[in-house]
Length: 91
Image (cartoon, rainbow, N blue to C red; front, side, top):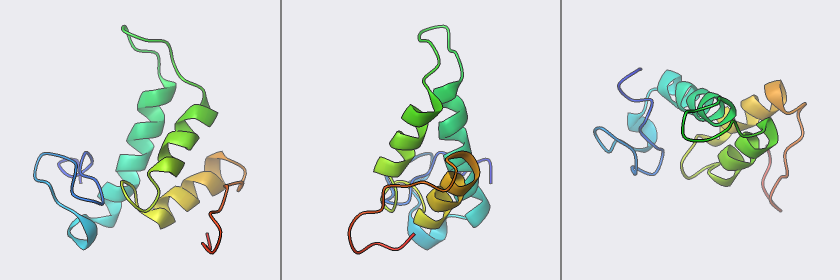
């Protein structure tokens, strides 16, 4: 799971360039959690971003970088269930 948490659904991640069903569900969950945590945490080279900014980032990657069902679950937990749903897309 830890090895795969920087992999992305479209294969653009690392270290192995895995994509789609090759990624463990647990790694897909950890990937989204890691992005939210990294963005909302202060770093020596930048201040923390807001939770809204982090949620916007994972929403932009929904279905391409991040598993859509994991992003939707994240919004239900952290975003109060609100997610801008693209037309014709069911959360």
